[in-house]
Image (tube, rainbow, N blue to C red):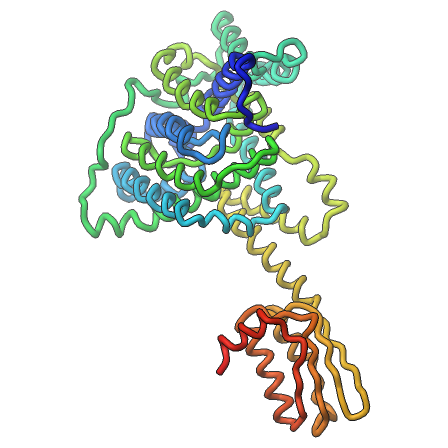
Amino acid sequence: MTSVKSPKAKLPVYVTRELLAGMVATFALIPEVIAFSSVAGIDPQVGLYASFVIGLVIAFSGGRSAMISAAAGSVALVAAALVHSHGLQYLLAAGILAGVFQILFGLLRLSILMRFVARPVRTGFVNALAILIFSAQLPQILGANTQGLILIGLGLVIIYAAPRLIRSIPSPLIAIVLLTLISHFFHLQVKTVAELGQLPLTLPHWALPDVPHNWQTLQIILMPALAIAMVGLLESIMTAFVVDDLTDSGSDKDRESWGLGIANIAASLFGGIAGCGMIGQTVGNVRYGGRGRLSTFAAGLFLMIFMLGLRSWVSEIPVAALVAVMVMVSISTFNWQSFLDIKRQPKLSIIVMIATVLVTVLTHNLAAGVIVGVLLSSLFFAFKIASLIKVKAVDEENKRIYQVRGQVFYASADMFIDAFDMKDIEGRSVTIDLTHAHLWDVTAVEAFQKVQERFSHHKAELTVIGLNKASSVLIDKLTD
C-alpha cells in the first residue's frame, strides 16, 4: 500500500477515508495529550494547542504522509524538569530552540545516523510502545466501575465486529459515537472527557515567550532544548520507519526532521509544548485508511473543532470509549511475529530486541530504550566481526607465510597482533599476505606497525603483499 494519488473518480472516496481516519486519530489524541500535559506539569490546553498547531503545520512540512504528530509523552518527560524549575515560558523558549536544532539536523542530512538502528531495535521499539500504550490505559481500567468496564468491553466488541457490517466508517469512530449515546441516554455513572482536565475555550494566539533575551536564559534552556530536539527526532523518525513498513512506502527522514522543527517553533509561538510523532495515533490512522497528508491535517483540524465547536459533546465522551480504542491500537501495534522470530533469529538479535523493550518499559523513555538497543547491537556486531579474523601460518623451508583473512579494526586489533608467533623467527624470511584482509582505522594501523616492529626486533626479513589500496592510503596518512 502506498500513498498514491487517487484518480478523479475515486477522489470522494479518498477524501472521505482520509477525513474519517484523521477523526479516529483525533479521538485517540485527546486523552493522551491531556495525560502528557499533566506529566509535564502544564495545563491540558497547552498540550491541546500544541497538538492542533503541530498537526496543521507538519501536514505540509513533514516528510512522512499519514503520520500524526502532537504533544508526546517522551517530550513531556524531558520538559517536566524545566517547567518545575523555571515555568511554562521557559519551556516555550526551549521549544523554539529545539525546533532550530531539528531544522539544522534535517538540513545537514543527519538522519542517515538512523541507519545504525538495527531491525531488532525497531521491533523492540514497536513492542515496547505497544506495551506502554496498554499500560497507560490500566489506571482507567482498574479505576473504572462496573458500568465503565462493561463499556470498555462493549467498545472492543464494536471495534472488532463493526468491520464485518460496515467498512466505510472506521469502527473506533462507531464505537465512540455509540458508547457516548449509551452513556448519555442511560445516564451512566462513568468518567468522561470533561473530567480529564480543562479544555480550550478559545483559539491559540501568537506571542513570543515572556523570558529575558539574554545569555542566562540561553544557559537555562540550552540543554533541555537539545534533549527535547533529540528525543523528538528519535521518536518521529522511528515512527516514520514504522509507517514505511505498514504502508510499504518510503519517506524523507531529513524533511521530517526540519519539518518537525518548523512545527515545534510554530507550536511554541502559539503557547504550546513541543511535540513529535505519535506512534499509537499514527498506527490507528494508517490502520483505518489514512495514507496521505489530508489525514494528518484533518487530525489537527478536527482536534480544535471538537474542542471548541463541539466542546459540550466531546466533554460527554466516556473515557471507557477512548480506552477501548487505545487497547485496540496497542494490540495492532505489537509485532506478534516477533514471538515466532525468537526461535529462528540469532540469539544476539533477540537479546537486543528484549533489552530495548525492557529498558523502554522500565524507564518509560523511548529514547533510552533505542539508545541501549543501538549500543548493544553495535557491540555485538563488533564482537562478531572481530571473531572472524583468521591468521594462518605456513612454513616453507626457511620462510614463513602468514595468510590473514578478515577485518582489522579496534575490536580485532589485539587478536591480529597475538596471531603472529615470534618463536624461532630470528633470521628467517617472513611474508604477511593481506590479500583477503582490510585495515579500517588508526588502531588497525598501529597494530600493523607493532607487528612490523616485532619482526624487526627479531631480525626477521619481512615482506608484506596483497595490501589493498584503501588500507595502503590509510597507512600513508597515519604514518611517516
